Image 1 (cartoon, rainbow over the protein chains, first blue to last red):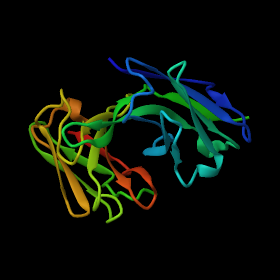
Image 2 (cartoon, chains in turn brown, purple; image 1 turned 120 degrees about the vertical axis):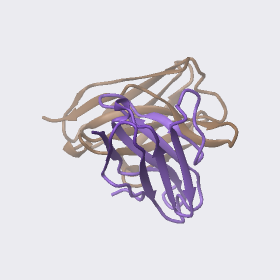
Image 3 (cartoon, rainbow over the protein chains, first blue to last red; image 1 turned 180 degrees about the vertical axis):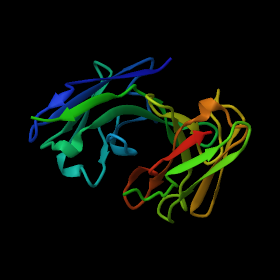
Image 4 (cartoon, chains in turn blue, red; image 1 turned 90 degrees about the horizontal axis):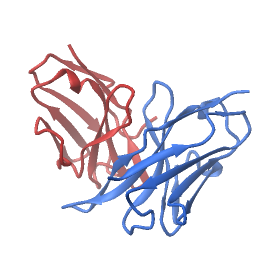
Length: 124
Length: 110
């Protein structure tokens, strides 16, 4: 069974960087065809895809966050990470990592596995 | 502001049916498939429907969905109390080059 687990500080000071890691078990992060995403949910709000990364390191970021986001993969630890710089209170959210797979029979992608989420608060 | 528009709320009584709509554009729903996610209170989202109308293993047949043009809809028949949750549509957006979520619809089972 595939399991994703987010980890990282729950409190970050304004203007600093937020760093989170997602540990994948039950699947290889190097699996071709999957991509790995960070999705956040501000309090009382909907879901926002921050970006995604393929095992080879190819990334794509939400245009609204692109200037502040970096994602990376560590295949030796079967992990992928998020770094969001210059955070403000608007970045306070529940951060999820998720796997997107090409599902049969159509081969179209969907977020089929989600972590439980980790709450990050930006406050001094 | 999401590029996919959903009604903020919907409701129904046990046993009834309800339909949740999702409206987009040619850049997203019009040219890509739609997925639906269910988020129960305090839980992570769960994939409910993928590729417009396919149910993952384990999702009851009471849940169905369809797509037409630049709109999609999720239908829930035989409402049960455990269906009370937030429902999100999602689709790839060619202009934004990434997956986009609707704003979500809070379903209340009265």
